[in-house]
Amino acid sequence: MIRTERLVRSFLELTAIDNPTLHERALSERLRQRYAALGIALEEDGAGTIIGGSAGNLYAYLPGGETLAPILLSAHMDAVAPACGKKPVLHPDGRITSDGTTVLGADDISGLCAILEAVTSVLEDGAPHRPVELLFDAAEESYCTGIQQFDFSRLRSKTAYVFDLSGPVGSAAYQAPSIVSFRAEFTGRAAHAAFSPEEGLHAIKAAAEAAAHIDCGRVGDLTVNIGTITGGTADNIVPETCVLTGEARGFDHPLVLRKLAEIEQTIRQAASRFGCAVRFTTETLCQAFRADPEGQAAQRFRAACASVGLESSLTVTYGGSDNNHFCLHGLTGLVVAPGMNSCHSCQEYTSADELTRAARIAEALIVSRK
Ligand SMILES: [Zn+2]
Image 1 (cartoon, protein in one colour):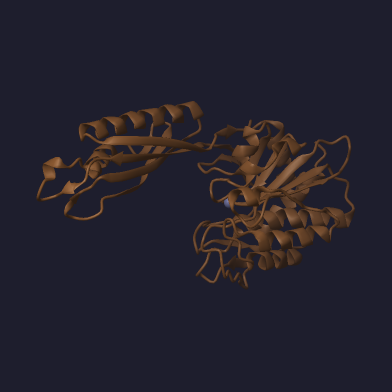
Image 2 (cartoon, helix red, strand yellow; image 1 turned 180 degrees about the vertical axis):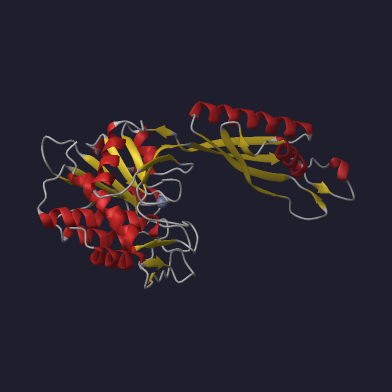
């Protein structure tokens, strides 16, 4: 049985542990202890060493009914800053917040706790269940750098439920975008701004010209943003360098790549107008996925919600998650809401009720027969 009191205790305990990205060691040790007490050995991979973090990804396979297909349950261990010195506060109405000076870390400790309580409950009850793979990754908030080092060939599941979506419990995202970032480094020529300005090539003017010609916001079916511009050294020097960075997102990966090619062209034209050289690079941070909202993964999720008296809602998200990477490696996955609100801010909150509902969904997925 899902026990709210035990679940809330776990949540308060785990959120009180410092867990900024690349510093997940203490939390991962605690998770391993908690699962060891259930007889489950979480194995750590070498991702931490590769990405320069303190912990790798944790993985375990929990055998279950042999005729049933395994499912993957996943949540990430790190939280966005400020994630040190967190002091979770349980309010009399069941709401849980930080003390206002840090994030709460419900993103994604609500997911970790939903899965932990569900597994605890199933084992305690001796309930028949399907095989389950558990995967708790490091460094998700830095564009999934941890999970990208995971050996996906280990996975036996064809279906993933990634407990990492903000919004009401009962919702799950079946579609998420490609996110591709770009960086343009303009190089002109420095000159004294008053003695010999004609000898200079103005890198900031070139970058500004490019920025002025790149449509931002919702652009067709995509979103485009210029996020930073940095350049110049002093008011009396024609700036030699300027760096422009930004991103494009969309559900159609080739369309995003075409947009990046267009942005590159705009940037090259602006650079040449000012006689500047430009180095343009892009990085695909995650690749779009879409699961069939009527497919088996979605139907099982809907049934799980219904079995615990919850309304379900299948949505799309504009954020990336580990699920983008699971889908890239051949799984079909949904991103499930475990009870996190106002994420990535010090106003982040959850509640005992939300945590309980999320754990019930996780449990229903584990004991599902279809
Ligand atoms: Zn998250």
